[in-house]
Amino acid sequence: MASSVYFARLKAGGDGSAIARVQQLFDEAHFDRLITANAPTAIKLHFGEEGNDSYVHPAFVRQVVDKIKACGGKPFITDANTLYTGSRQNAIDHMNTAIEHGFDYAVVRAPLVIADGLAGEWYGEAQVGKKHFSSVRIAGGILSSPSMIVMSHFKGHGLAGFGGAIKNLGMGCAPGAGKMDQHKGMLPIVNEASCVACGVCVEVCPRGAITIEEGVSHINRELCAGCGDCMMRCTTSSISFDLERYGRTFIEMLTEYAFGATSGKAIGYFNFLLQITPDCDCVPWSDAPIVQDIGILASIDPVAIDAASVDLVNRQQGLPGTRLTRNLAPGEDKFKGVWGETDGTLQLAYGEEIGLGTRSYDLIEL
Image 1: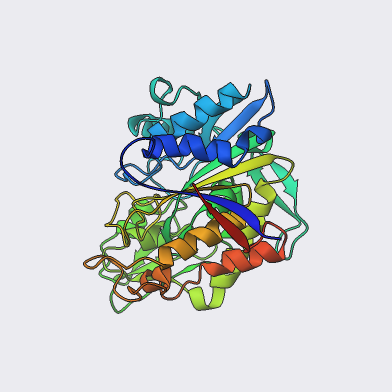
Image 2 (image 1 turned 120 degrees about the horizontal axis):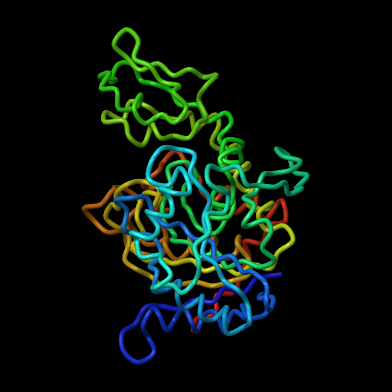
């Protein structure tokens, strides 16, 4: 059976503002039915790495906070700490970054809780019984909340192909230990011919797994967590993952974690198809969007909302002068045009296979 996905295009005038559309989508998707009165409702976000500006805007989050309060719920905004170094690796830096990006109480009118504690120590187990994991580790603040609204910026991602609801659940709801679970096998490889031994990778590695030996970077595979920080920061693009060998496994692990994050809770999803960048909001910059802004989607099915998002992006004409250098024509796969070795649609196929949701959807335009 197809899942309902509600779609609001952006248009000017009247009630066509994006803020009004968020409120309307909440109502049309019947998210009020998900909220438990006098109980916590997590609003799962990505607050954006310091230097990034493409995350979901706090003004949109405020609309969801107000709606949850009107339903009698107790909303809080949340995310889990990162595995890699940066401005969100521990709760203190994470909260400071979130506040600097506008996610403070004066704006969103909800408290900010880092879901896995000060340094990733607060988490519990969710049983999944899947191919790669029998159980997964989920951040405590998310695991204990009876309901959740997941608000995702839909964009590209080097390892997952794209990041939407599934990735926000799988990677975003996991503590550091759970993120390491998902990166098992995704060990980086150094191209010694192009490495200039600049030492940037040594500086950013959170595990101290990289050294300079005989004029090139050397990665200790026993210490490496597979976070990819070295790859993102490499000044000569000399570090990469073996996606052909390990890419499918990573995406399947990510999707199993997403399944675990949904355990025992009522969840609604928003995908924001705005400023659709080639990279995740984890990078400390925001590259030029690869297609024009499209709109906002809402659903109770994470697979269906991501499937609809992919289809809507692919229908667009790619924007010239961006990282999208092929597959620009309407109907062509835009994320494959940026990340040629990565097939993000594996998230959808495997998500459907394990019962996370369905790829079949009815797009209901407001």
